[in-house]
Image: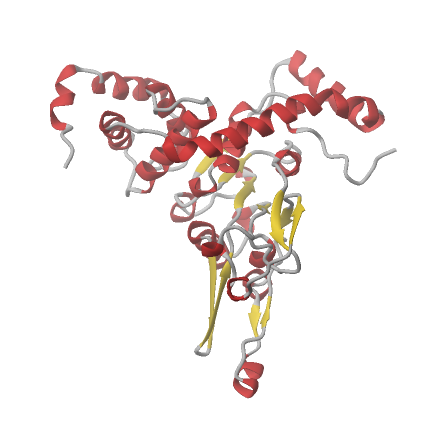
Length: 351
């Protein structure tokens, strides 16, 4: 029999290394800006999101606050919590907040009662999905089928960590900092390039074309469904190791060093790959630093930059014929190789 809190363990997900890595990196550093997972139906996308929430350590919230503010971080608290002096705290799990396809803008951003504001002179805010999502995971299935404006609002909140609402001159702001996981089935149409560009990372789920691996998927799934009491404990240790690794990486992140040479390499790769704007460079810098932290290194290496490139650039390249959509690894090698030539060092004096 299944208990409600049996969640398929993150470590038990077979293969899909890129997807798992992208999720872990966003857990360590939500400022990367979320991940878009592309893949057909029934490919463990929502399983992975739930497993990630379960993997993340408990966190303290202000008891009774609708935004689940962090009692120790006054800067990011809502206006109510900032005013109070004695905040009661409680530990809770991170959870997955889902955004339904049919959600209206009011449901997403919340609504302000204008009447109430005018009559009583105080703001009455009805929280929406962005309020629930604060310090949690926001899971948006089939993001390409959502209204573009709503996707814009989501991505704005994800980037700023805040939700700002204005109605007829009355405005309200609250914290809305979350790990954004969007999914889409490429067969159902693309996302506009300017929206694509705003997802920090993008991964394609590979269909598994190897019989042994597929058999492993089936076996694990069956064991999980039929004998959860035997299956789940097998993975507790692995999940715990990952959890500790996330915590360590998160602590290490602020002290990671990224040299001028690596920054030049990042910029050059973005130029060579024909990427527009600067968002790719900045995301690549954040991602390679987070990868270094994940591996417990003090400084970003070329290997980290290379791994970041595959997660950051695939959805930002100028659109080419479908056959060339994948990251061109030969071109990436060439780009990195050119950067290693000695002459490239002379221009990196710091200002």
